[in-house]
Amino acid sequence: MSETKILLSENELPTRWYNIASDLPFSLDPPLGPDGKPIGPEALRPIFPQEIIRQEVSTERFIEIPQEVLEVYSLWRPTPMYRARRLEALLKTPARIYYKYEGVSPAGSHKPNTAVAQAYYNKQEGVRKIATETGAGQWGSALAFACNLFGLECTVYMVRVSYEQKPYRRIMMETWGAEVLPSPTSRTGAGKKMLAQDSDCPGSLGIAISEAVEDAATHTDVNYSLGSVLNHVLLHQTVIGLEAKRQFELAGDYPDIIVGCVGGGSNFAGYAFPFISDKLKGAREFRAIAVEPTACPTLTKGIYTYDFGDAVGLTPLLKMYTLGSSFVPPKIHAGGLRYHGDAPLLCGLIKEGWIEAVAYRQTEVFDAALVFARSEGIIPAPEPAHAIKCVIDEAIRCREEGKEKVIGFILSGHGHFDLSAYEAYLSGRLEDYELPDEKIRDALAALPRF
Ligand SMILES: *Cc1c(COP(=O)(O)O)cnc(C)c1O
Image 1 (spheres, protein in one colour):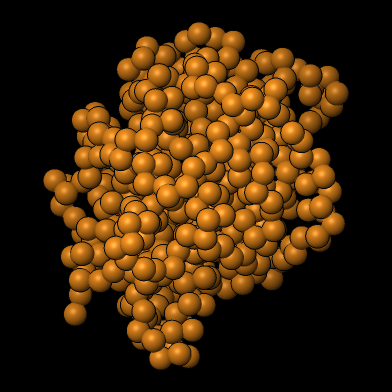
Image 2 (cartoon, protein in one colour):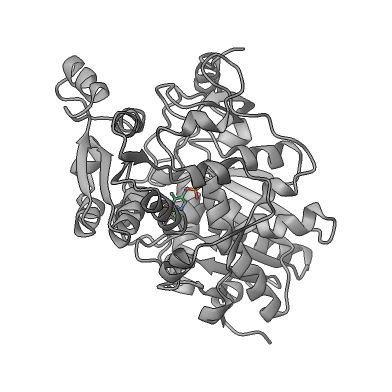
């Protein structure tokens, strides 16, 4: 009988990230510039450090994690993997369920895994400050934490409605020394333009991105940083799956089903890609399931095509499943899953049939979150509660079919800053959003064409 908590010692912390680009049995379409022609890495020079750009286009199989980054990782890594024995007992399932828990990081999610690496490379290349955007504040807090450790300044353009309605993440960022501004601001051209149209503008993620990118592009000692979607972000997150593989070895198991939630794809990829590596080589067979909300069904209802990464059309065009960059998803509580597109690496693997995707409604996701909190104890963030819903469904299927499968999932963060969502659920005020197909059709009609 394996243990409940599967821990690695500090000297088992992986020293290299895994780059799945080296193992793909197909090629991915390159990012395109505004003229529809492929862009080279040099186009990213004004906003990213050289090493990040190198990693973005690298096809090396493993990339060394710098010593300074490992030292910071060791503050909370390796993270624990748990056998969900109480959940298994509650569901009366013969399945063995394991979860890798990233909520033990100082910011409470997986996001510091890339924030720390990005802050380090920026510091190495003499950058003074990193500018970024944040919606609910998860990415902003991870970056604020990382910048603080490496002595970098950090400016976070926070969507104004969130800034006003969700003060705790803002206070967290300020505690780590970041400057947090309600976006739109009068500091950038993009912000001034919005304020001129509407002095009471509530802001949006698209506007906040424009402000952060402009801040970086117009100052030589300021860079920009992104918390999901891009190849280098997924690369940094593979530290999760590399640890988890070792932990499965210690448990004497290997997953038959791997599950994670998808916003831009970084926690799912970070956990799953080191396992998918075995699948690509033909060494193992298992199902990998990416879970998203029905309110923002990028993978299940979007189309695979070129689209902008942001709402304004500033970024290069990426080949991905998208609902259209003009798509504004309903305000579900899993704020981290409200992105119109997804990571090109993940989308390519889904397109080629290596990974499946499913979507769930908000209320059934919170039903699952409560089952988990009341059996395993940890209160999950609304984002990974989507993965939990899928895991519970699969575990029940195992019971019905009498199959003893091994299910692994990633619990990407805790829900301590999402208690107002739990309050809405507990008081019966949580709503479902089944997106009408014509709304998706309208947003897709506005896609850029080539
Ligand atoms: C940001 C976030 C997500 C979604 O982003 P991915 O890039 O898809 O991982 C999921 N869970 C948590 C806890 C987050 O903070």
